[in-house]
Length: 329
Figure 1 (cartoon, one colour):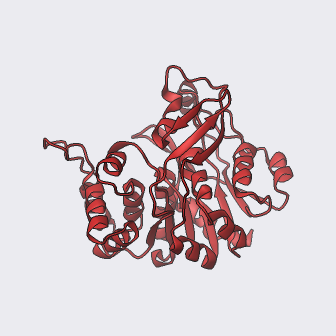
Figure 2 (cartoon, rainbow, N blue to C red):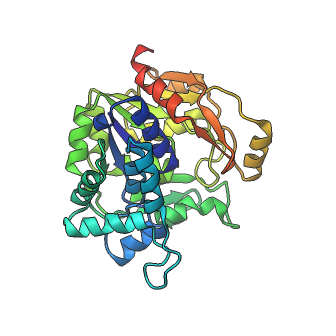
């Protein structure tokens, strides 16, 4: 089983699958275009691939809760108590960067880290080359860098009428050959929830990835986001997400399932989201069927409220149960 994604959505997906399934059967594919935070600094200062998503996926694949708890404290430590160039870096990112240097390559560095922490599943960067994400907007403007695209909705100058027309890399994006191999042998390919234009769709821009997915015999599963995102998916419905996927995949029949949430969300919390320019992603099933006649829309009660960060998330266990039973639908 191959999962493709980034951020919290990918982490939650992997956590659920690890608890419900054999982690050694999982391969997580992650992006290499993160340009912000500690990952972005290491990319610029040291010349390594951004390790943040890799770190989170390795954590998610750890089976032992005690091991994961200790590793998370170690990986997430920000070194705020020291002065100098390492201040503010995630210690987990430094481990990944050093292993990439020692083993002379990001793929070999990630594999060494997997062996070091005795992790059953695999984490593969989708490309072994440095990538810079670009976005073209309605109105003609261009934005350079994943972080700038990601945060555009927070700008005081943000204009929601200037939607993202397309995303692209500013150089050739060669695939990690092992990702192509894993896609070819997978029985399921799952796109996690996450930021559509900065975490999910860019994978399909990497050379050979969409072709490998189209050629694969695997079932392709799309997990629909719970909420829209200001600056990326303002006012999006399920059909808008699907339309975007199909335009980059360039095959209307290749997505077999779209998993959607069916339980109601707390109106008070929704009010907080709306003040931030976000809303529930409505499932317009009829329009989705017109776009992709063979797609199956799977509805399940998946959303849970995280009190600590005041966010709706997919419940990892419920999501994994739906995915593992999806062949029966």
